[in-house]
Amino acid sequence: KSSGGMRDQKDTQLTPQAPGPIKDQPRQIQEQQKEETIKTSSLPHISFRYFIIFLIIVLGISTRLFSVLRFESVIHEFDPYFNFRTTKHLTRWGLSDFLNYFDAGSWYPMGRHVSETVYPGLMLTARFFHHLFSTLTIPIDIRNVCVFLAPFFSSITSFSLYLLTFEATDGSHTAGLLAATFMALVPGYTARSVAGSFDNEAVAIPALVLTFYLWTKALKTGSLFWSALAGLSYFYMSASWGGYIFINNLIPLHVLCLLLIQRFSSRLYIAYSTFYVLGTVLSMQVPFISF
Image (cartoon, rainbow, N blue to C red; front, side):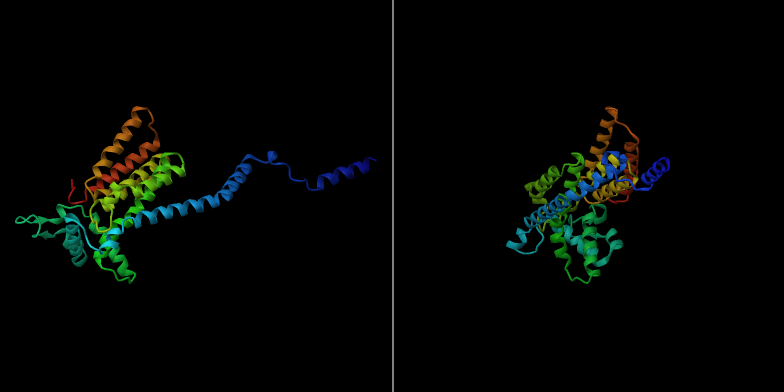
């Protein structure tokens, strides 16, 4: 009997045990299983969400093309036409000549030193896309690039506001989609980003919203990467429009409020130090801003 009992005990030790219930498994495995379940169940929601964002972008761009459909691809108003004329000069003669360009036809009879009296971000952006299309062997006139630049950048504004609202509301996709919809259809912004409105706000407002999103992301993560991206976005904003002063005021005010309510942290220190130093040094390279 003793030998039989020993054999039974050995058999029970050698036979593989059936996996226990989920409660007996380690907590990390349970969390991984929950994450995989959430990811699997949320795949249709993610695809539907991106489809809605795509529809918002299409809606925002299409509402800004009525001027082209009703009339033709032309530049509207006086300032956009001056920007278009300087962009043609930049495209034809290059950046070095543009920085020394003196326009005798403006501010007559005194004339105008263009690089020291304009924010060159708009012209450089149009020149970049024209060069990109030329590299891809896509024939397109610089005028059409300037006409359709504002509607294209309106899509960046809507998507950036979606990301900003998503971060500000701790992950509410519904609030982000509503904010993107409002931005795509709001009349005040539509008037400044309609096709043919080749003005500074066309590229500056997307940069403004994107800078605030990147600043929020940098503050929440304390990452040098996001902080540097916020500084680069601020540099592009400062090179495009005088409204860069909004960022100059609001972000330091935000930091001051966080200090007053005793919310200082290493993440705030890293985000603001990187953003302020990089953004200030780069913005001083714009001739119109300088030191």
